[in-house]
Length: 316
Image 1 (cartoon, rainbow, N blue to C red):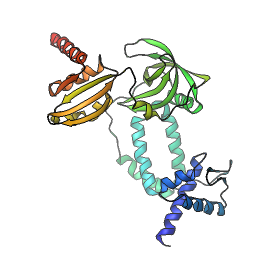
Image 2: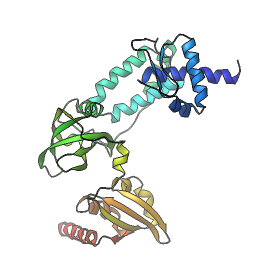
Image 3: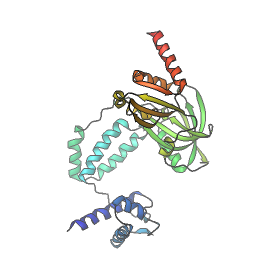
Image 4: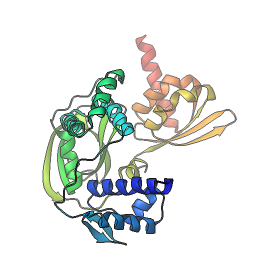
């Protein structure tokens, strides 16, 4: 059997997997995924139909499996099995507690369909992989909170929150969730807040109560990164000139504090930020490398930094 037919068998099998895992699969998406022409995908789908797989749909619209049709368990390659073991170790350390039990039961189902040799492979290697996380997991006030949030996204229904801010002020918010993300050891919601009439981030562990409503979203939303990367009108522009010898130590933190542009200058790097934390968080971060940085703007940041230095000097 030549290489062409082996590639076709692999591709047709992968297309069948896509049909099992998605409600509708477009030919154009499959062509992009497998780097072939749309016409090739049409022929692959025809191959599956000729093999007796009941596929609904037509070229130009989308394909799906007939509702209720059952396929035998999927067989995994050795490389896929090894990736499951590694992913499981990562999930044990970083998975949100409200998803932990669901993930564990899902992995048990995956293990149940593995070949005997693959089960032995897992047993022999899973104790040889570990992930070290030095940050304690955050504790939530509500069990099963992430699934509730994800259901609201899928159903496009508003949520009502009782939320505590960083200074312990409690307020009620009605939100339309765009998505959730994990950053710097915390889970966050990106949502449209009807009280502020703007997009806001909410830290999941600060949610005291959460209520599902039957109220539909008032508007359509794009992907979560569209909103995380777009500065809001409440942000302050900051420009720093940072010495080159320190820039390597700011790789992750500078993005967290709102970096939008980085320009190499002869005397260092000009970093441009859009930040919500100009009064507290940003000055406290800046003080950790202030001897390697010059504030270009705004003037108010220089004042805040001087006040912070004065306050610290009075206590030491």
